[in-house]
Image (cartoon, rainbow, N blue to C red; front, side, top):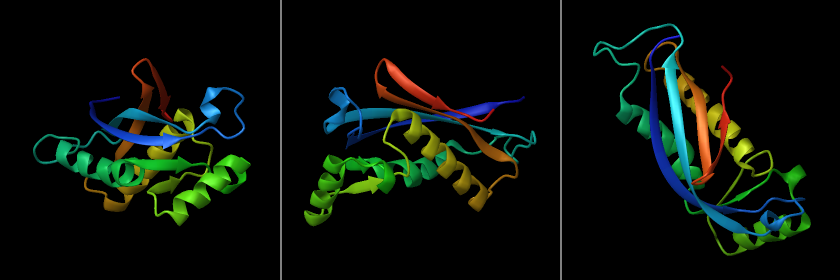
Length: 152
């Protein structure tokens, strides 16, 4: 255990929950808030005494989160789509609508898991400081409801 740093951002997107019996089966949108926490699992800091510069964390978050989700329609992976979601995806492609596909259903839980995996992949790929890992992603779907994914 040691110091952790957290960065927040918001993005807007639409989705539907294929196979869900409630209102969320319909296409709808949210202003999501995401909090990403990173730490250095080896207890290392840069020459300034930082785990990592907040600017660098913000850049990675923009690349992984904003560039994929913001103002897009989010779709479930192929095996998780209902007929309605399949039709909507074809419409989005036909009309050049911004869209993004995650492998699982588009729940806050699955989206937070996907973001967690992608951020860790980016952190390992660029490896600015050895040992820096994303340890938690909190994704608010509404001001009162969030999902958190962590492996710690």
